[in-house]
Image (cartoon, rainbow, N blue to C red):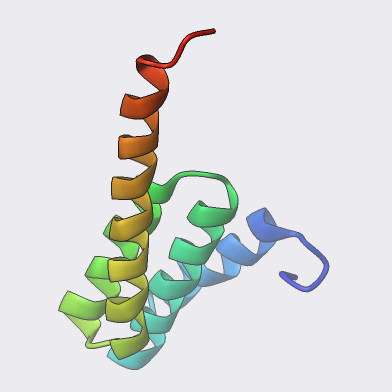
Length: 88
């Protein structure tokens, strides 16, 4: 579904995966939901999902991803601050 750029449909599958009894499956599903949130432009939600994937389910890739997202959020905040003082 993601390969066909159908993120909403794929998220439905990941929501179902969250009901799986295996933590590894749940961690991967949260990681994938984080990717979908990033694609939608919602970096804060993406980071929160990635953090949850790591903290609750031990997904190491999600830890790295959450740090990357945190840096991007920080950088965008700084850019916004700089643009507020820029002449139009």
